[in-house]
Amino acid sequence: MFKKCPSCETKNIAIVTAAMLQRKTGSRDFYRKTDGWLDPDLAESFPKASAFDSFITVENDDNPNIIVCRDCHAWTRIEN
View (cartoon, rainbow, N blue to C red):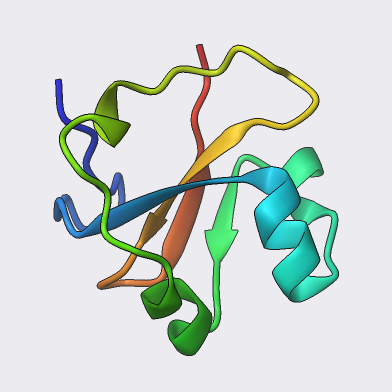
């Protein structure tokens, strides 16, 4: 199933890692929280996810994958 933004249900998403978001923002919130909001410029800077990216699952709990919505700028950690 293709992942969608849980906030606005669009498929205009990017799938990134918590480490990548921490490097870009300097915040460790992506490891502690399950969701939140990003600066619009940052959210739109990630490439749109392809159909292949949508099947990524969390295999490493130390660096979880995160869905970033490019439309509403919400982020949500992908849980198994």
